Length: 468
Image 1 (tube, rainbow, N blue to C red):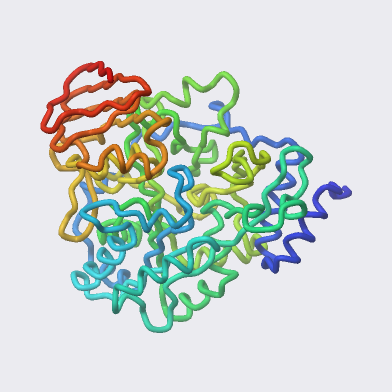
Image 2 (image 1 turned 90 degrees about the horizontal axis):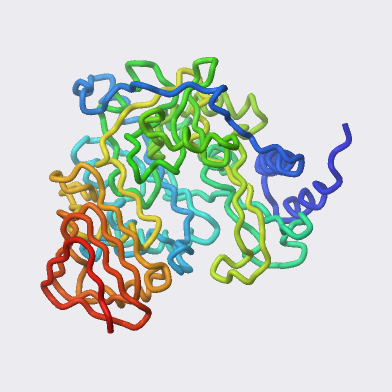
């Protein structure tokens, strides 16, 4: 069969940019799927719910074999995001998140504490994008003794051309510059580890396992019991999954294919009319925290078998050329998720973990919750839910006034409210918060476009209407 002629311009653009052959082949797989109209649906009839998982809190203490495996484990943090949803133009991990410390400060402290506690090297590797690498490494320079001899502190995620939605041509042909390119999702982790030469360096140095998590999830640290469970069960891939709550119902979930293997089903894979089943958190109980563990030698074998990349599910993401300018040309980004590899690794498994291992910050709503007293900073530099809470507070701030970081900071310049006893906080309108504000239970603040200020020390319950 002749190849779609629309593909050739993309090949030329990527070759001219110097992309590795495996990265090009991976992108072309997803481009061919997209151009052919393939949607990658995963209907209910093709899957089964996952009813039970082993529980982290019920695992036995790590064995001697697990402690030995820790000496051959590396930590990888995904650090390619710019935080454009908050109006940032630098790495989101440089944002102060708790007690004046940035994500990167806390990640560095986590690793250094674990090294002292466990007595192992535990290298830290950041997977950076071409936009975040230089400034992230500059920030980490303040943390001495972080780099392990013979290994870098970072490796680069690949980049792929955006697709102009108007005519399905490569954006770099008409718009030279970085805006025409995008990272191909964190599923690129596996290919970039290999094409950077880092996978071979790790294997050559005797490393066997990797623990991977998002840079914005400060509840995720190396847990010896999880590695012990993985070693004892001879699993080559382990996903940390948490209970879905009402706030998670629109996100992807863990499921089982008819052949018995585990898989992830994302929102884009839901068949028409099956949204209620997809959002049924009693039926589909677990979501992927994006905390993953995998066996490095098995990854190498899979990459060699598939031509240097893993054939993961295609994610179609629609944006604008300049993410901060909604009037710029519409583009399509083809991405993959690293968790989708659970269906490719032999003896892959999943483990139920508590919410304390999942504290992500994607939006200013998340940032307010994490900065509040609903979350605590532990001695080992994790940011986790206060032990008196079981689920995070649901925060919804009016996007007209709070979505971007600068106006968000202005409205909480005198301090964030106490959310320890708050189940949900809704703010509609242009509201500035005074010092020492306390929210309890389900709180709704309703105001208009004119600025209003909540007085210092006020306790909020129920619905409160404000006027200028």
